[in-house]
Length: 403
Image (cartoon, rainbow, N blue to C red; front, top):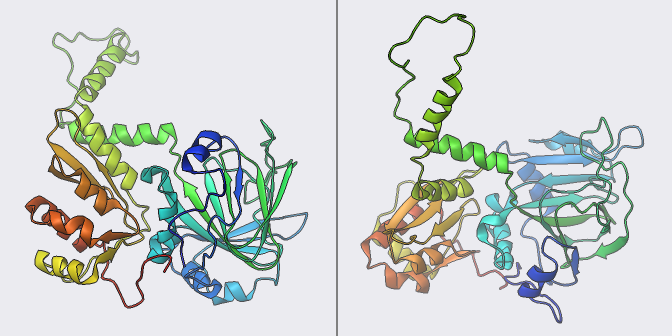
C-alpha cells in the first residue's frame, strides 16, 4: 500500500509545515506514511541495479583506512555475492521512473510545486550500513519503509562542512550531532539543505528518499542562453566595418572590437522575449535524464480506442518516467502550454482545467477529462500523450494507491 496523503499529526498541516519548517529546520513525523508497503523487495531492487539504464551505487564501510568506498552499477550477481554480511548499502536512483507503483508516493507531496520534485531513491542497507555523515544541497524527505534506521543530525547554525580527503564520497570531517532519532516503518524525516546527517541501519532496512530539485543558477543560465541562441541565431557571421585600415600592430585587438562583439550578442539576445523564455523553462524542467525513457505503444492507438479504454478502465496510470507541467496563457497570450518530457504542446487558451487533470498524479481520472474530449485539441493532445507513453494500459494488478 502506498499512502496518498501524509499524516501530519496533531496541530500540524501543510501550511504550518511550509511556514515553520520548510528550508528552515528538520522535522520528524512519526507515522506520516503509516501502513506503507514497498512494491519492490530487496531482490527486485538488486535486479533493477543490474540494468544498464538504471543509476545505482553500492557503498561499503571498510574501516578507518578507507571507509565508505563506493562502486557504481550496473552490477551483476557476482557483485552481490561478494558483499559482506553487514555494513553495506545499495542505493538506486529514480526508482519512481522505473516503477509507477513507487511513483504513487509523490502524490503525498502535492503541497509542493510539482516541478520541485526530483526523484525517489530507494536504498537497502544491511545492519550497520550507511553512506557516512554528510550534508545535501537540496531538501529531502526520508521515508522509512522497512526495518529501522537511526538518524543523527546536527541542527546547529553554520555547522562544519569540511570533508575528509581522498574518499569516494563527501564525508564530513567533523560531525557533532545534537539530535538522535530511531525511525521505524511509516516514519518520515524532513531535512532542509545543508543539515549534516548520518543514517545507520539497525538491522536490514529499506528507506525511500524523496529528493527535491534545486538547480544551480549557472546551470539555468547556460541552458537558457543556449536555447535562446539556437532559436534566434540566423547563421550570419561577423563582417568587418567599411573603411577597414591596415593595423599598426596586427596582433593587437582593436579598441572598439569588444564593444562591437558585445553589442552584437546583446542585440541577438534582445529578441528572446517572455514567450520564448516560458517555452524554454517548461521544456527544461520536464527534460528527463538521458537514461530515463518512455515506452510508446506499438502500434499507436487511434483516438477512439484511447477514449474507449479510458471509459472502460476509469483511469489510466501515469508512467513513472512521465514528467508533465503546464503554464496557463499569460496576459494577452492565446495559448495554454503543456510540457511533457522536454516537449512543448500548445492548446487554445482556456483549457487549464483539462491540463491540470492530465498532470495529476498518480493516474489520469476518466471523470476529470471525458467531458472535455469533445474538444478536438484536447482529444488530440491526450492521444498524443498516450502514444508517447505517458499513460499506461491498466493491468489486472493496477489499483488505487492505498487500496
